[in-house]
Image (tube, rainbow, N blue to C red):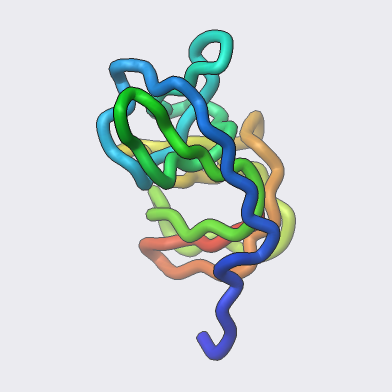
Length: 112
């Protein structure tokens, strides 16, 4: 692709990381007041963990992200995404509505 969407509207907030969150680069959900945990298959995500240190998680809540996709190429445009098998992005009718800008058979780029 000839364009790059990285950096668009990125907003990151710090949360307490629960014990399920052991690595950055995964979808997260709220698990308690001010606390996030790793999403499981079928969950609706609130953001993506972009950093983890000392029991705290930096979570990107808006802007462009590129994540692994659970299935075939996801069509561009507004789609409802949730977490599929293996923690990957998947189309989910009860998911979060996002703007899909680009995708391949293995990745999807979208605006949170």
